[in-house]
Length: 289
Ligand code: B12
Image (cartoon, rainbow, N blue to C red; front, top):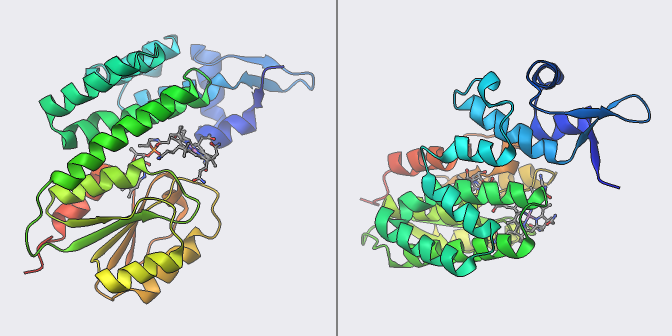
């Protein structure tokens, strides 16, 4: 039997209010529900992805009346075709399992746009869409793995070859233990490197004690932690421990979906997006002089 979602599950997964959900449904037929055995509304699992796409479009200024009846694929095109036509092209190559062509196009886009622009404007939103389609069962696990590993290779290579000034300050990048989602910190490291920071990229999944140990030895001015998981109850305490035991002039910065639940402090900064992170590393002088 296919999985169905109740109204409260839809609200929990998308953050939409009940009133808006019902209005989008009744007035614009943007989403469809059926009546379950108990008389309650039941939505197909794919409604979550559809609502998220509609939310993004409305957030960018589209009127719900003009996008409500578009198919999911058309919503993706409406969302990205002006700002990043390359994203649609790469997504289509993954959908059709044209893996070799995907990789050559990534190489071509990196060459044409530069890896930083490609990463922030195309690769990150692409992976967010890949994640959504994978979750909705529209994209294979292999396609998701291939996309992740290809982008990791291109971003890491650029991270290694971008020159650093002699007296650059150090920024450290990692995630807490068991947090294996890595693309956010990888992209953040690239952004910092372009702003002149020496990046110590430790990769994901590190125990707090290990992070503290590295921080004591390398004395980074910025410790960047990626947090994707939204139900890690211990994250606040773990991050505060890092703040407490590291040098008083070091800032701990946390970004990613899970970071929304973190309460920031004087030396614990919650960053909402890569763009906000870029502004942060651009403002804090990267040179030690
Ligand atoms: C790829 C992926 C993986 C890969 C990660 C590979 C890698 N090397 O990174 C692998 C296969 C390892 C994986 C494993 C798991 N995953 Co996973 N994964 C995904 C997937 C498909 C895409 C995530 C991704 O990379 N997105 C691309 C990034 C660029 O987008 P983003 O995460 O939205 O981040 C944006 C911002 O938040 C920001 N950002 C992110 N990090 C940072 C960091 C900083 C410093 C800054 C400034 C900004 C920033 O930048 C991005 C662009 O705007 C998502 C599905 C989805 N819809 O997101 C699930 C998802 C994140 N995974 C999930 C889960 C549960 C898991 C697993 C526990 C089991 C499972 N169900 O698969 C395991 C184990 C994870 C673990 N122990 O850490 C859940 C998380 C649920 C939750 N809300 O907590 C998701 C949402 C899927 C789901 N609904 O089940 N996963």
